[in-house]
Amino acid sequence: MSAITTHILDTARGQPAAGVPLLLEVRSGVAGWTAVSKGVSDSDGRARLLETVRGPGTYRLTFDTGAYFSSVNAAGFYPEVQVVFEIADAATHHHVPLLLSPFGYSTYRGS
Figure 1 (spheres, rainbow, N blue to C red):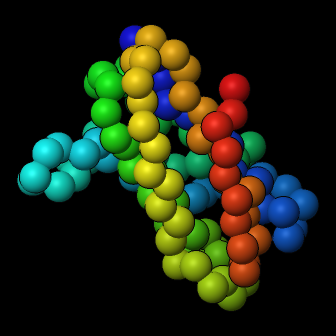
Figure 2: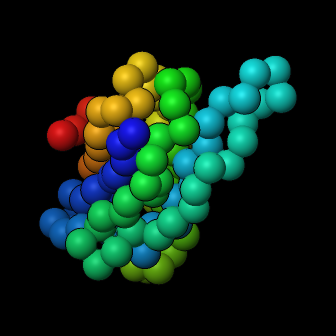
């Protein structure tokens, strides 16, 4: 088993996005989503959300960007960012970075 991690960088401010509330969920059939882990990004914008992946499946990571922008006295267009991704190999590390600004974001599969 492996971990799911993230690193959030505020590209508008040129620094890590600390204090971003995070929610990790796994799709659970027709019932919808089941919460797996909650966290908050540290002073370097990083968070280790789950020590071990529950197994193959579809996961959703929600970044509470509205709370973050409020904490830095900035207005943002996206109150939250949700990234849905597939895990096929639960033994592989999964890193889901977020590059964030008040009016845009991007993500990718990191290492």
